[in-house]
Image 1 (tube, rainbow, N blue to C red):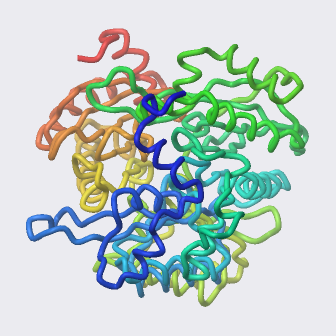
Image 2 (image 1 turned 180 degrees about the horizontal axis):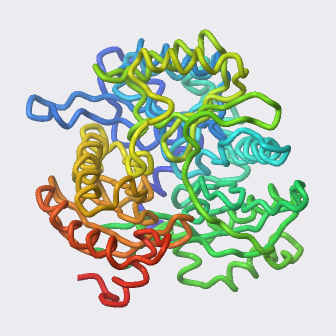
Length: 556
């Protein structure tokens, strides 16, 4: 591939394979409040996005940083969580954001506090490298504490795979830990090429998830590579490999689309790292480096086919994958409230609306979590559904934790309606530069209106999976939801309908533009018909697929 066929991002990566750019120099420049456009691209590989508060643009850009951690499996020790809480108060906006990739983000960090924050994260034995950028991102895994040995085995696999696929650049340690620029005279620096990613890294990001049927709480088919655990007699015997999933698309570009992964074959536990590494290298070697909108692994499978992919994978492995084993997903979502673990301890599932751990006048979630972790020392587990699990709680601690939460406005028994607890939103405005419409700040009030509508049409506390994003990139996985809202412009959304409870089916575009004020009017006849026409036990998404798709096979 010649240079004139490569995107600007590709040329930029080739120019500095260490990913160092001029980040260290800009950090050292007290007069600089922001990074250059080129360094902004390099920062992503270090887990950092340069942003600005779009609410304040009329008075001039105020540059702020978003920092994302890489936490494979989403598990934090009590000490780690408390340090992250402290850092978010000292250097961020006093919130922590649980992401759909099972990690945490800091928001509104100033450039002057950037290194201190990242170094503090690393001092807590955590990292931000490869949380963003054209590399393997945070590896997700089923978050519920072990009911047997399988879950802990899979969590260990997620950590092992995350470490094996992390970039090896010396720039990260030099900049954020040592606080200095790389020595360009060093031959190891001058000739650095990442042993896995090469000089240009991947064409785009790469996402991996481990799932344990029958619960698809990681949305495994939305990932570039999914590992579906096959358990027989309480023992993990291997994984079905799925490949080629992804949510991102662009408005007005039919060549971009969400896609569910294809099941490729079965592999044994000892083959996981070798196989996933081979999948990553296929993306590296064949992914589109001219058009970033066509650069995800899903387009390779869509364009060349599953058989081509399987043949290429098996050639690289030197062995054939076994046929996929039978499996079944029946639901997705997190377990809320108290649940007993196999070891006699308990875990508590807490709904965190839109993933934002914060204090409000009504609910002091951030303070409550800090006090619980300080006093009772539970393990903190983050979920791909934007929620939090507190694990390894002793039976005698339950009552005190429940009481402490109540004092801070949080009920354990009734954390929200079924539809609210099944909702997700991306961050979008005011900090995400890609946001076209509100999402995190808007969805809670919309859910309140939908709750009223459900009561109006006699659906009571019906669970409907609702997800919203402020742009079509799909960070909250709206294309797998029973109802998905995708921002099109300020106050205007696409409505997508027809995902299923198990998160194994894409929904479809129902209406291209619906104004905020018209959303309930658009949903009212649909939910009214569903209430009258549904079969016994039939969910809204399944009714849509059975009835509406037959009536309206193409989007209007």
